[in-house]
Length: 172
Image 1: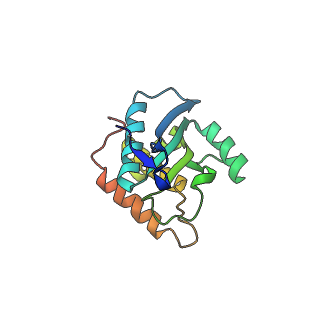
Image 2 (image 1 turned 90 degrees about the vertical axis):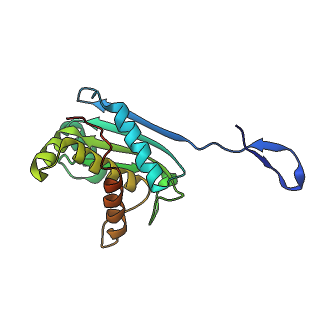
Image 3 (image 1 turned 180 degrees about the vertical axis):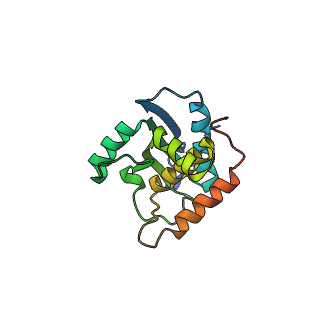
């Protein structure tokens, strides 16, 4: 069904812009996981649950070497990290919520660091992956948790993880 928007004065009509809802997954330095489709679906569920209007996300699943390169280049920290988020220009800002926001950006997740985190925090790989992905998505939405202003972001992260706890990406 096409929604039509009429110009003021009733002159002409044009179709309403359809929301973009795209999530792409790429790999670098690691094997392509069999759960990539479930990861894409989980991202869409997170964004729907958070109330985003549309989104265009890319996720890079990589090894520690690639993550260290990214971290060194973009954050000047010469070590791997678990997740990096790169909001695109139209998503940057100081959002307090995702509701009604367009979420556009790139997220990188180191699968090697994810495995260490899961072991260290005594959680499953699936739980840790979901935590990293939700965290990255909220940063791409313009949210931040630094300098004492992160209570809202971390509270939303916890809420989303609770609501979506039955969703499975990695079926261990």
